[in-house]
Image (cartoon, rainbow, N blue to C red; front, side, top):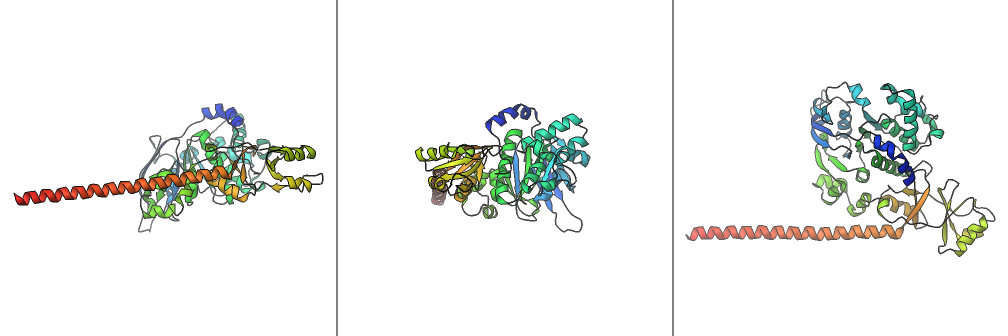
Length: 432
């Protein structure tokens, strides 16, 4: 993966003291929150009541036009509520100066929203500068935030947004939103404008960041698979932001509240549950590797004498580059330039098993390389491991269905028994 990915254990350990010093998340309470636009017969958002826990990642998902983005924007009052209250950590912010409020809440949107005339460093420094941080502290924070989102400060701080890929722009957008260390981060379809592979990696990056920072994140999406992958809880919204179900991803997948929610879950709930398990939760195996700096004869000997018919070739930075097979080296003619098959995709330890399964299917090797924060190789996950996980989920679904059927039978038997007792009591009364 050319854009940086997730963290290694050593990087995570080295950043732990900084992470521990950061502000954690804040509770958010919405009380009868309503938005009514002039001239409209119905409110756009109608009396939403919700409590979001500190450090929780909550997803708003629903059909287009249901009011999910409007509800999100009322939290930082980019859209002013018509009525109702907003409390953050118990403080009523409904009547606070909205500009001051927004400086305390991170905000990330689709297509990053970076200012094109500012460098990456200037974009990230924007809010800390506005609230009066000293220059030295701002400079350190910019370096820290770039490293946090997996971008090399030396390489990226002086670039302009036009010099970045879409995924890199989104990373900078998240860094800017977090720069002033807000307890709350609002994200309005932030990954909707990038390609699917980059989107998967950005989702993994957000999961990693949340593990480190424990912010309160409210995230809007129309993609239910994204909601399952990211959310601690999901709010499935009907028209006017009426809450159809507000629960954990697993609870919604296994027990949708009604047909409307079932429509969002769709077919293949068991496979969707692969989004609930991370690569870090299954066995990540080591695999024979060589590097582009190794002598060709040494690589040939390792392939010839090894227990596998394939090696993973790493580039100069230790990142997965090519899959090499024995026959490839016979055609190499003293060079690795034309040998092997390029690695098309990788996953991180924060990726879901569904991501891993899709990646394995795109790779011809029957396995996918697992990478760290800078894209460095850390191991592989193979098809056998993934299929075992799929079979376990399907078996659990089968057992759950049997248990549910038994519960229904017990309920019917109990209802029948009560009805019969009632009839018997009635006959006794008539006889007397």
